[in-house]
Length: 311
Image 1 (cartoon, helix red, strand yellow):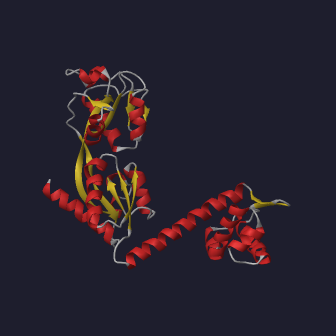
Image 2: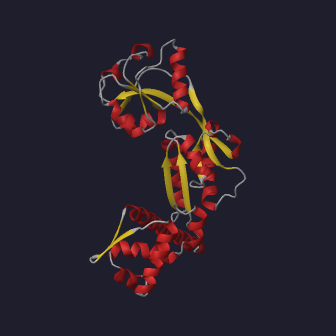
Image 3: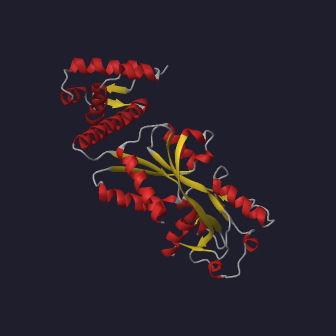
């Protein structure tokens, strides 16, 4: 039986991680012992401790050396991740001690990327060039889940989709205009009299059922007294939408207007001449309610507020 997480955390040591990586690198107890500066008997003992900790053999022994089995490869993969995380921790602490640096992990919904994320990160780089930034683009629900797990420092999204929206401090930024799009070479793009009724029976790429943009699209069909497409392909991926629009003439999708304008500029898609009065729900910056904000997080929010004030 696999040992509990608490038991692993109590018993796992840094030299265990180093040994696992050394064994994978060299396939030899003797060479691994030399790399981690242990005697061969001490290395053998440490390996037994590791295998006892996980409750399974992790390596196959043979006269030619030692090779990780399937479980061993899994443990080694995570050992390398842990070593990389410790390295990132050390680098971040060193940057803070130098009076700068730090890291910022941001989640952003698709529509906010060209309007807010891109210009704000550019401005942040100008005032704090040694900051390390990690960006995740996904829907609000998944990003808020990552924020709850402290994998993200802030989310540009919609806390309203959460089952506990009051768990977040929220700075509203914008509402989202949407538009209908087709492949850039599609003849529909050149039809000034096109209507939603005229394309309702076309192949559709639609947002997944749990997303706010899906609700908006359903409302647009309901407003027009039209049945929702029965065999639409559902996706939350921008790249998948772009690729699928090319899958057949007349394939239609729905996108945030600012995102569509970006891709339309390069001819990848075309925006249909169908006015859309409805807008998506407001989005903005969400952070964990009451949590102390690190300097890079606060600076990002301040830059957003400065941009909002001049728009």
